[in-house]
Image 1: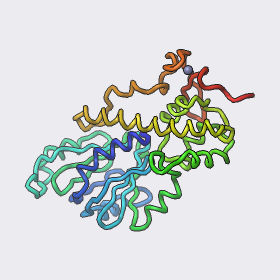
Image 2: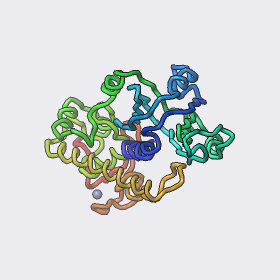
Image 3: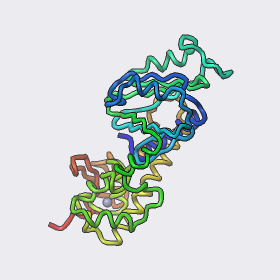
Image 4: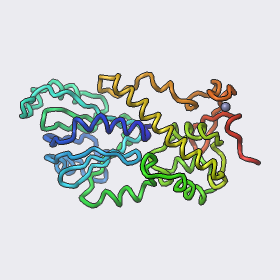
Length: 294
Ligand SMILES: [Zn+2]
């Protein structure tokens, strides 16, 4: 499932293609993408909108329009954008669908859920195998309350160790469950939670409120470092990767602990373990990350 670094990578891919462009054609093929709204209605409202920014908050992509509406996209499990080449209409006038080889190619994408054609002829497809992804079109003024109701602070923004400490102090749940809660801090999912806990040497089952001030500061640094490493890694993948099919490069090998159970801890050499915490597969070092006292 995409987490903050992956969504930020998608944002950086979409931004140059979308900003300044208008939506010349909009097809929403899957009603689940926009439910409970009607897909034809949402497509009609999007048609002609001009993109002024592509932002991100937590794991949400925010496509902002000149009308001050915003399209909030959540990729969930398998949502992905593909940006096709402009194959016709380079002079400004979009070609008809039959004239665009690129459209034919993207329209044939398996699990295609929506297709946008920009006013420069570039096509942007949204595919989603599992169909949990969502597009929510918000009216002017609705975005801020929508996000505030769902998300805590942005971890790479104005987010201090004191902020984190205040949010943990109220919670007796395992620290991993608490940092997975998007209201604690936005954008951290299973991978970066495991990475941050390993970096800060905190066992995932420790009660959140039981962390010392030193541990909270360490975890705060570790969350930011893990996410920044993820963004750098995805960025490297992005630079090296030309095809728009979203498959990753080889950079996932850089995780310190996630997916490495059975391998030696990169810090102490002990064999890394895997268990379940908060219903999620959880990777940790049994030596570096001391379990909570019984
Ligand atoms: Zn270790």
